[in-house]
Length: 391
Image (tube, rainbow, N blue to C red; front, side, top):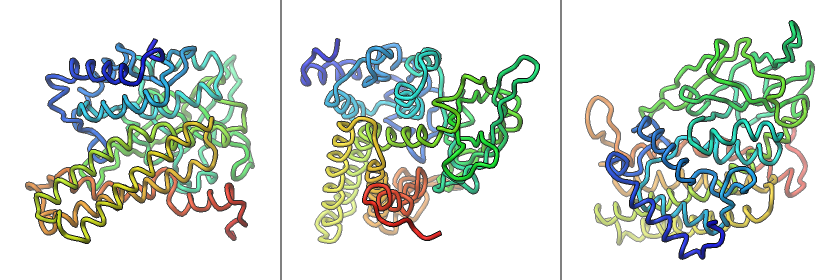
């Protein structure tokens, strides 16, 4: 059991396994495939996910009773650090491992856990998130996608109709967890349910949204009489808002640690760029780099605090607000360091450097997953108890 290992022993275990397995084509990827770069080496990264699963590196912090390894907080941090230092391929199932898995463990039934957790743990089933809609982005309570329970002809199935948008990797996912309105006439937070819906069926259509970075991992997803079993609801009917918010809490807590190790690598690259472009001694650039370093340490400490507080509450919005702003600022800093060179493409017709992709993609960090404005409202109203914003 890994919990019996000291942190030093566990670090050695992680380093050894990564050194022995991040080789060949996996090593050639150099850690690519992250935000704004998701299409790079995708098939290879799918194969890598299965390698991780076979070796027990998926669901590291899940409890033993649910197929995880019960890793301590410090062990999970060590794994994230060593994974990034080894430049292992970017992961393809963040939604499954870090969001849905903990949500099913907390809110799902035993049957749901038995059905879905093994596919996440062995790297064979990928998930996407069906939250945002054209008129329900940051204002998730405005969800209009509907689901009705069909009990005709001996069936008991939810029938789903509606549209989701910004559905990351929907075109390569097997399942989608969606928030849908299951009570006719309900409004806002009431009458919503959290459903698990198979993506491979006639009633589901995905359309790729091409981004300014050149990638296309975002999608529009259309549900037209799509179906899922009556037992594919997490929590009770009408209890979807509570489950959905619980999932977002997991997103803004434990799963941010690995993300922050990636941020550390990006910051280090920016420091090296400052040296390359002769900006390392520029007092303004140095001050901005110091602020970025300080902000990254604050992100880490806040994530550690969140991990020790059980199921995250609305306070988790602190993390999203802070890291979204921090990452956007890092993208701007990187281009400022490069100066005019940062505004010129590497090649025609449309080839961007990793630094340019970072700058362009991070513009979205303060919007997706709940905009900065929404996060401030959540913190003001639900944490500080301030009056609600006027309608």
